[in-house]
Image (cartoon, rainbow, N blue to C red; front, top):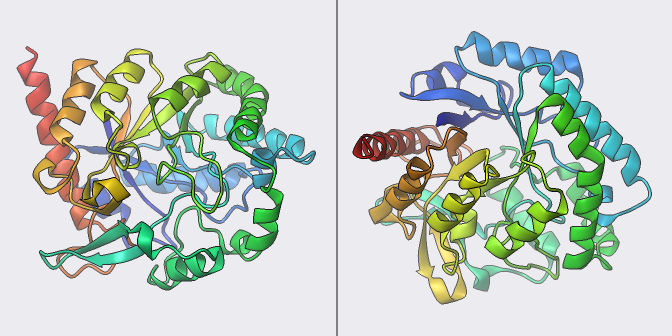
Length: 358
């Protein structure tokens, strides 16, 4: 199991690579070119520079999160063919610099959604939260809430230049239901997967977050049944999943350890996001993020790691989200200290589970 840490680059992340390098057990920086417009080809010189930064710090550059997918592909517009060609070129370019896994999602408009980016917890820390009763019917208001709570940081998947035209974007998705979105995903797979197979780069689709429809937009990766449909769209180990324990766990009906066992066994899970949440009201899917400790959340992280250990998982994993603690005023969900504590905990669970097998 290869432990990583998400990093937003030297110009937009207060966390230094040298600090990440000091977290015991971390071997990978999970990063991306965040300033390349969605749909454009990632230039080789910028990839080379990013890799040099990471490797100079003593870390690996094998997982990219994310190469976002242009809305025209998800909607199924005639212009999608050019964006698919661009994506194929980006896959090829990344492969030349040692990238093995690309994390991505196929969510319309919003990559993820929370109603509070700094929900106050009883221990004095703060974390992101989702309270459906706080949702407004106006997506513009939702965008303003996210932007105002981001502390000036760019939030992944919330590109201002795209969301500035939110009404037009919603209009384009008007006729896209879940079946149409699945068809458009298959079209995307048919275009890129031969390139993935040729250059040995695995795609790892991230679950919908939260895993249910919002603002009338379809969701197609919410549970095990959805995963079975997606893997059948293109039968290849290069068509894989990012199993995010938090996103799938936001629906209490999802048996996350069982999902891990099934899809790791089938070699369809090259990337894991380990995240814990605590339900405030499971029936209303109301939750806040928590630290990784099983006792502090609603997801049994021991069972998650045991499922990985039982299948001798040798893919990539990173801690996902977490609190702002000890006075840190970092990017919501992506502070240094709580994620570092999470890594220590996850590594301890992994060591115990692996030694118990001997």
